[in-house]
Length: 198
Image (cartoon, rainbow, N blue to C red; front, side, top):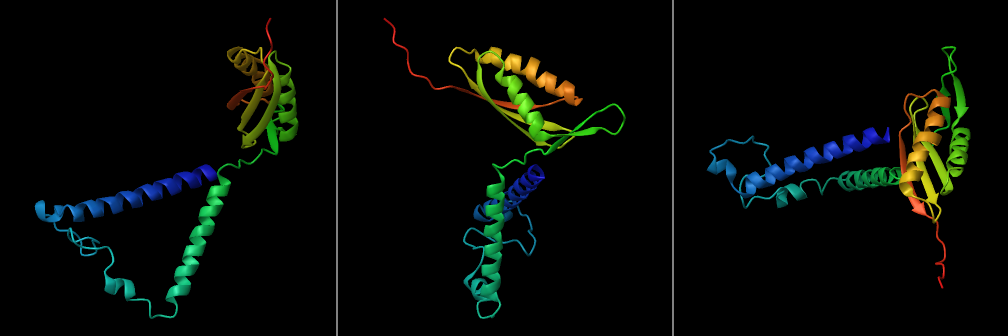
């Protein structure tokens, strides 16, 4: 849902900015006269010295009693929608349940937290992994995993990633009967004091 909203908003913003930029460029460079092109009567810029809103246009609605409440309400709605969109970005919904193929055609539901715990326990059992945090998101038929691994000082990141994929993620995918389980993995090293030599 959020991904679709983001794409629609970015697409709309792109179209509006492109149209406004084209209108300003055509008006500022006086391209309609240079190219002998007739623009629609509603075109906002007629020439290099034209403005988007004239002084008369800006003062047209000020005397109306409804003008300022409508402007303030529209701006408040825009600010609230922008805040909602901004706060929704970092928060991904955790998956509550995963649909497991039980072989009878109906399937069984497994709690997402239980699958996260099992996956984290298996990841932490891997050599070089000090701590693992797993978060499942997506849909219950197509889950996605966000994995945070804290590596021990002696760990080799490439080896830890390879074993995570071939063991923990493969086991989770097979046990849940999933065709795929995409994962985003973030690695960090555990902090430790420097050892003295000599």
